[in-house]
Amino acid sequence: MPSILKAPALQRGDTVALVCPSSRPFDPGKIAQSKRYLESEGFRVIVGDHVVKRYGNFAGTDDERLADFHAAWANPEVKALLCERGGNGASRLLPRIDYDLIRATPKILIGYSDITALHLAIHKMTGLITLHGSVVMDSRATAYSHDQFIRALMSNQPLGAVADPNVIEAYPPIYPPFRMVIREGQAHGRLIGGNVTLVMETMGTPYEIDSAGKILFLEDLHEEPHFYDECFTQLRQAGKLSAAAGIIIGHCASSEPQGTFVSNFSLEELIEQQMGDLGIPVIYGLRIGHTPDQCVLPVGAMASLKASADGVAITIEEAACL
Amino acid sequence: MSVIKPASLKQGDTIGIVAPGDYSRNNSELLVGRAALEKAGYRVKVGASVGERYGYFAGTDQQRADDFNAMLRDADVRAILTWGSIWGATRLLPLIDFEAARHDPKIIVGCGNVTALLNAFYQRVSLVTFHGAALGTFLGSNATYEAFIKAITVTDALGSVGQPRLMQGVEIEYPPLVPYVSGSASGVLVGGNLGAVALSLGTPDEIDTAGKIVVLEARDTKPEMISRYLTVLINSGKLSAAAGIVVGKCVNCVSKDTYNTFSFEGVLEDRLMGLAVPSLYGLRIGQARNTATIPLGVRATLDTESRTLVIDEAALT
Image (cartoon, rainbow over the protein chains, first blue to last red):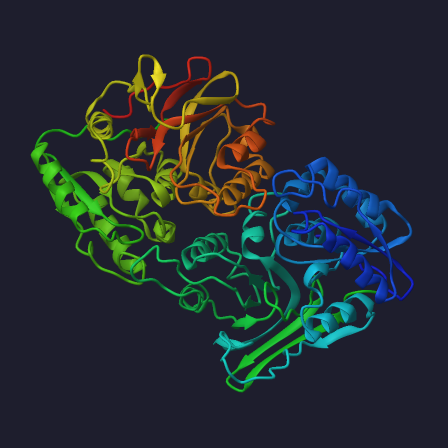
């Protein structure tokens, strides 16, 4: 494991690259919209050459997406790579990414979902702390998300206690709550994780997730409980769950059974079955993924998780950026 | 590695039925399947917890494992046929008594998620197992039934398997046989369900594909997820290490997403054509009504020119 590497925090006036290492935006106009938004935040914006190219549901071929990614990383003006969206395709690029280039010029990388592949591979190969947080497309879905996004990009201090989104209306009730305690306990370690499907896509590869002694966070979208269970079984049998110091399962939207079975377990019940007997703290519901409110978790930063009947505290103890 | 081959099934032998993963909604599968097996001249023993439900599983992990292990340890049982189990059989891997199969090798047949168990039996105790018909599918068609009975009774090498039905030399059902990378290769057959193969990575039962003919089939899986499974098998070196790749007939692997995604075949082209490994798509291997039952752990030859997969080695003694 390489030693921890950090990128300089963003400042107003810095140049950022808007990239699509996975899928292209649903609407090409969103690129211009995101560019104007980032400019309104005080950044100069360079847009990848191939962001609206099309190959299947990828933003261009692997060569084209890789060219944009490397061009941004090689450009000395660019201080951060901001992903417009996730989708599919990032894991295909992993064997061909120039990790030496990344190691030589640490930059901020932010995104989630399919971008998990880049977080896990880059952190494992270079030690760089990257930001698991909004893609630009939904970075301003709520004031909470916007605040999390901008603060993580621009702070050279520890992000501290992870706050909950403001709940303005009590009804309709939201489920799961932001921090449901599955197992009480305390954990201290570096943050690692992301999207369940993408974590699966690292298994058995040189970029396989290392969860030993770390706080493992997982989320996904639009998958049925049995799919989560197969992935949990894989991680459990690979020793990735028992090795972790603690586990945070995010709010996994649209993950109810789709009528495949007459009776079924919910995701909540499967988390309990697969992770409840590990002797480590486990919580469920944190808004880290495909939800309008998203917090930022820096991949590789030291953090603590305290889960008890009195509540849950998650604290990012280490600065993610210089 | 010398493999352990079970004895062929003989008239009057007992077939044990277990449900190692999810439960089947259709109890008639058990009734009709049992009757068909008895009519074919076999005795049937049904696992004690078959019919149990625990969420979508056919009983708790321990109940399902106890059933499986009871069949493995029962000297009367000469074959184990699985029921249901598109999901959840993987949970039993730490609980299965693999050594029992070494002491008393028997025929084990399954598909879908049971693939994980089949490959583990091969990798842990060198047992030849059978991928194909399960209790709910072996009566899917005449061809499926005949292939199933042949696979568990014949002591000769099975020869060519999984050819689609032809009429005047033309395939009359979809899909046709499609080679993506031309060539011929021989090696031991491994694999089965694509998801189960991919999700073995990183675990103690991670599939070994080096020099092997890898069979892959899927059911109810979006093309995007097929692409992801193939990508992790590529990134882990599992596909480039293989001698050949056979993609069976995949059921209901269509995209519900109309947004610029690859079709199922588009995914296969995109992921397989870049490999220097011969690959053939469309053999009747998998979970469709018309499917072959193939032995895993014996030598076979893939030839894309003749569009055949030939089992070269006997699977039974």
